[in-house]
Length: 368
Image 1: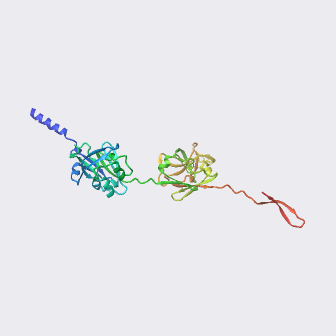
Image 2 (image 1 turned 30 degrees about the vertical axis):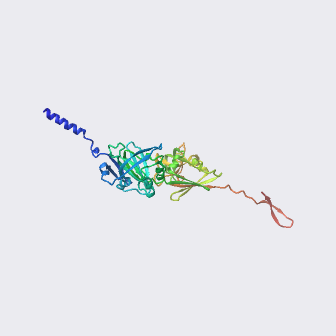
Image 3 (image 1 turned 45 degrees about the horizontal axis):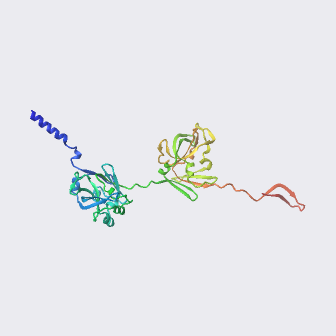
């Protein structure tokens, strides 16, 4: 019984000492394609692929030569081809186990002849001086294998955009993830403001970087139905117009929607002086409001069809404005000069008639 108990204890110990299932395949890393296809690649997988072997070294940030030795690995381009390759404009992000990362453009991964002559093959090395991971303490490592066996800072600068600080940081050690990243499309411009020769364009991010204004506002439809009050956040028109050259003494602000609907505002309206209604809907000849180009209503982005930008009016006393002034889907704002009325010049005929002995009559003339 003692022997049986001892044997059972040994077997239990062996079971407890077994590594988790994910560790039984040895060192591995994650390969991610531009379409988010994921592939776990093991050392065994790398050993089954075509390899490249060459002596190489690199120059570090201090100008010293480091890492000289014999490297064996698989071309990064061959690995990337397993998950669909890279398109023009894609980049490649290499991440280490400590979250250190480097990003490379497509030309580094699929070098043309002139780049290859400088940097050689870009590989994921799994062996260094006949030592294979996991015994090779740098783990899976990015390496460049030029024919002159030396990847210098000058080589890195000549083949990488933008210029890196040094070649050494590109030799990422203990790689755990290689990911193809599609280019981020530029943020679209959603608003243009025009005044004479000045034209300002804004993305949503740029508008949101401007000082914001928040408050409550609501409106009354022509049918008498009230909407709001809403919690509004956006940019006050006084803030937007300060970005333009000095405006004329009088002007009209024309707001154009994405469907070409046009709403016009006088200078007084833009400055917040307009007629409105009490919270119960009774007419008011004048209320004081703040005209705001809103991008949030009740804490959320303005929904499609009304936004992303909408002209609103906020005030502290809960008064309402006319609903037609709350222009939707605003994409363009134009400031138009309104000249003062002309001063008349000429002659004025008076009401007095003077008789002339000759029998003719004419009006008394006054000049001004």
